[in-house]
Image (cartoon, rainbow, N blue to C red; front, side):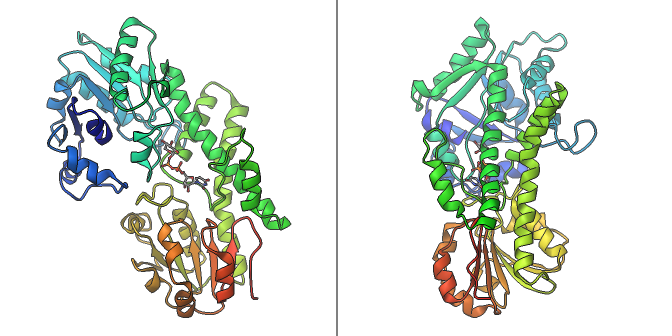
Length: 438
Ligand code: UDX
């Protein structure tokens, strides 16, 4: 919404939330989320055509277009637990819109829901004796965290799904007018509602599948002396495949990949496409295997015991440039390392607050801002998130502060392995042979 407000000075954008605390934070200079470039843009537009308010009911009635961007987590209970999307927030929002809207509205699904979810919203909005007309559009969000502003300001495409009726197409055009303020027309694509909803799930499933695919190749590299970076470069230069999302690592994380794939699995099961459900479910279960493999590599390298050993964890966020730790591989990996009775010193430039919540109540873990302090007396370093700042550290100084033999498990192939080896580290990259003095 901040990008829309800054690109469209002729529109008034109001963001509402049931959490007054969050709205207060959005009205301060301490925004509730970290995203490069966001604060500057909020400060520029706030109070002019961008507002944050907790007065939901009034704002619903004042709006012509309502973007629904509530969270749609995976259901944790009952039918479809662990796979289906929990639609309670969507339903509550639809009911609240219906109760407060006195004039016709365009309702835009921004949240990733499931296929045919727009139908659910429409049924709620049009139920009973309500004479207000609602038109529902699907406009899935493809921005990735950390590059959110760039992805929104210069999107590969903007997708708008609508009903193929005169009022559906008219609503679609109203939304297109907003994006046309800065997105070239050829990048706006329009589809029917269900295609738009499915395209979002399919895009994330394909991206996650690529990460899982390259991670399977990394496992083959580790036993054959092939090098995953070389293989990934050779594969990626085939223009039919392309070079993106081919970096091997400890597994994918984030709020979308697992959730959206499992949602698609649930959809397949619903339509009794069981083989197809099993195919996509494999992408997720392979990711669990990948995280476990990273832990096993640490365990085996460190003489099959981590009891009482200190490990510095470099990076907890699910990827760099965000403080978000939802579904971060680091959560699983750290819990497993703690199970092996290691002592963890976790460091991350932006995710320590979230890391503390994720590992709340667990023993044997400290959260330390300064990586140089985190490595004092450590037996090993596990790099899980490829923050740029980790490249610039003085590894000689780090080596000197550590117990010997010193291990480094570069889960992202982020550091200069040869240089680390020459300092004296035993280096364990992903998908390539270890460099060790042992
Ligand atoms: C994703 C989609 O990319 C975005 O389009 C959608 O709107 C939201 O979900 P996001 O979750 O922010 O975005 O992160 P993304 O950049 O896709 O990375 C997901 C995970 O895959 C991260 O844990 C990342 O580290 C991992 N990854 C990515 C790899 O391990 N290797 C790669 O080559 C790329």
